[in-house]
Length: 103
Image 1 (tube, rainbow, N blue to C red):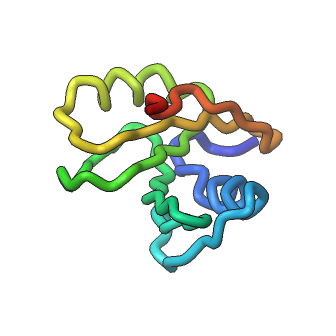
Image 2 (cartoon, rainbow, N blue to C red):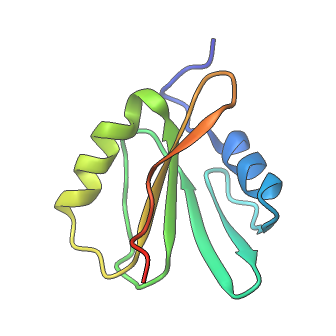
Image 3 (cartoon, rainbow, N blue to C red):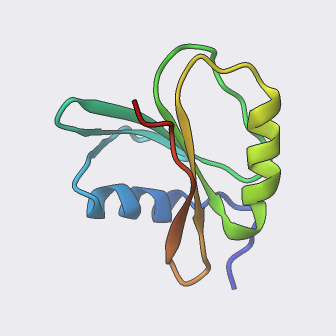
């Protein structure tokens, strides 16, 4: 059983690699994913979320049981950037819980 207090870092990297993104960065819980013209800052999180306030696209990857709480926390912050949330199940399956708005 995976501890839901530990961010799903490995799962986040695997998701973006499987989607064809080039994953760079060696930070424990964050990395950059790039494909074609799109660059995304990916943060594997549980409850603690801090954003820098710039306008970069962000994707927060968390365990399924943290998704609602994370979305509430992110919704109360002022964001100039687009953001998404991916919820990961213990077996590695994932679901996009909140995608950025489409233009």
